[in-house]
Length: 410
Image 1 (tube, rainbow, N blue to C red):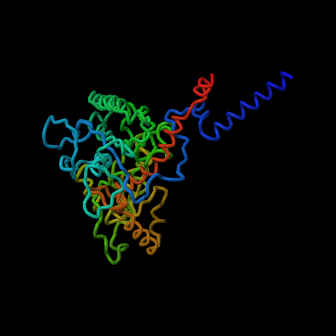
Image 2: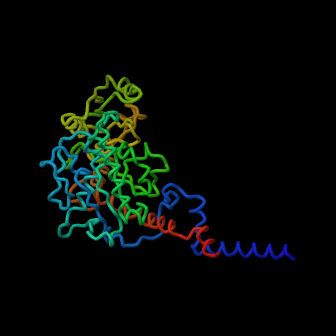
Image 3: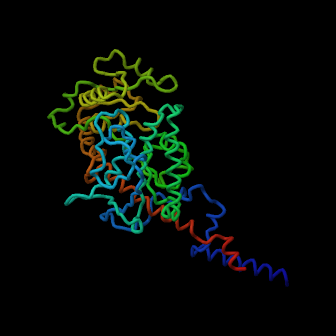
């Protein structure tokens, strides 16, 4: 008789637990299988969004002292003023000739888009709100990529301590914010497009929506497509605005173009081999250069006069050279193609690819004020698409855990 009673009691307990799981009051998975950020197992595509696509995302931007952002722009006028930037008029223009720093300037353009008030008829994917209580997302205006580029880029220089200290100070600031505490940082947006950006304390922001260029140096426990947004690099060369020749194929006399550093890590084996393979062709330009203002100008002209642009891998899977080619309407090519294959490439097919590059190149423009369907607006749209997953992660984290439920029953 006691055996039947025990079996019946066990059945009732299992039934109650199953029912609790069904209605969402008990979250066994979050207790027994907790992940570092609580968000990595979220669905990539949410089934609904809280607001209409036509309604701009409401973003609160933290008032960080200038040393976290424009204070690192060495070309800025003025000295020790460390008050937060609150208007677009206070934001210095991004200069023209700053080398490779420009390609990691996504953080600057996102900040600028929130500072602007918006002109008449301007369509924006995100608007700044001054009341954090009504915000849907929280932007952290820390120029983590510029911090790495400014403070000890060789990673052994004592100057790099400034980069580490900025990260320490920022984490201290965020952890004191009730909005960070409320969501565990899941609805916070942090740009870090340089592969070494935020390298000291990345693990402390792994629940946030990170704006990255690729996942080349990020473990799955830190950055995934389920929660993060992949950004193009900001192109270094000038955009080709008047590429409207009647015969663009014949006007581009160079078949294949590459200009850049031919000595990379591991002694530059791939690029050195390419240099030997491509030597001796009259219609191929494979040139060694460093990322100076003069070299970038030469690359601009070279890409505009070439049919194809070569793209060997860089330090990470993506490369700014790809986006330079897109805005130059030079068809990107990976190294597996041979010169003879490119010479046999049909003219009509190349022209169709050229037209497609012209059609989509505006999506890769970073500018202020942002323009409809440009890179800045598309990034904010992707942030908006990630928020339902972030909110679901917060909800799961706040669910009643099994030990809590059992304690209340006693």
